[in-house]
Amino acid sequence: MDWMAWTWPTAIFFIVIASILVTFTILAIKFPEAPRVGILRIETTRGDRLFITLLGSAFINLAWLGVVGANQPFALVVCLVYAAAVFRWV
Amino acid sequence: MKNDNSMAWMLVLPALILLCIVGVVPLLAVFNYSFFDIFTLQDRFWVGLEWYGDLVGTPELYHALGRSVLFTCVILAVQFPLGIAIALLLPQQTYTSSFFLIVLAVPLVVPWNMIPIIWLNLINPDYGLIGYGIKAIGWDFDYKFNALHTWILIVLMDTWHWVGLVAILAYSGLSSIPQAYLQAAAIDSASKWQVFRFIQLPKIKGVLMMGLLLRVMDSLMIYTEAFTINAGGPEGATSFLSLELGEEIGGFDYGPAAARSVLYFLLVLVVAWIFQLSLRRQNEKEA
Image (tube, rainbow over all chains, first blue to last red):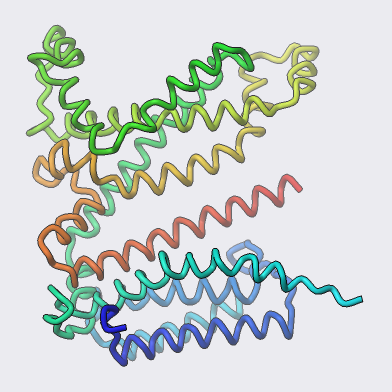
């Protein structure tokens, strides 16, 4: 696996993403949920909202890098607030 | 009775494994490389988020993004009306229609690196057919140093290459419209515009959406044609996202190129998601 240049930070990042995906898959099987329409006026399931959260978080981190600088823990706090908002209102 | 459908998962497994090998694994590797100053795997130095910071902190990225979006908008505005018009003019379900479809498909099978060479020869004022025409009308066409002329040439070339795809897709959609609709319109004395607006256009919307997705993705990754014409010039006026990436790969700057690739991947995800939403909405409307 050396050709993929793995490091602990990137490995932990992907382990967290994979764990979230597995958790949401199990949740979707165990507790199926009907889609709902939120403020975006689109039907979303838990999986859709997770996708919107992850994609949005990536852009929040990039914007943080460009505007504030490489201080990602604070960007992560913004991402958590964003995630809560997406799961509540989207 | 137990509904056992696990066999379906087994049948999907080879495709999933293949997708992992050609899609997920290279993506993970590129993501990892984006955190290194890397030339070879042995000579790599951890730089963290430095490349991402450099990338989003420079105006060149946004300029290239703007040029790419503008190019996509221009070619969609040109190729879709033109492709639909060609499809409407084609005779329906006759032997001649097959001939015209083959003619339309020819540019689609020309290797991409040959297309700019064909066009550079065509516009050559000494021996190119279009070049002779341009000289005859007295137009001082200078694609090397005039940005507007370079854009005109690239849009013309891309239209020649891809309008056939739009026309073929639109033609396939038009061919599938049941004759009863058109007969009913004829009985109601509907004009040609009304037939197009209320029968043909809604019926070909599905195939046009597929064409739109293909054209948006292809136009965002235009490289070979634009690079051969003027290498992003004059003064970066045709330096699209993919050309900037190509420049970094060509300069062996693999770390910044990997960071740029990850960013482009995120942008493509957004575009694909918007398309998926519109397709879903369209299906819901039809259902």
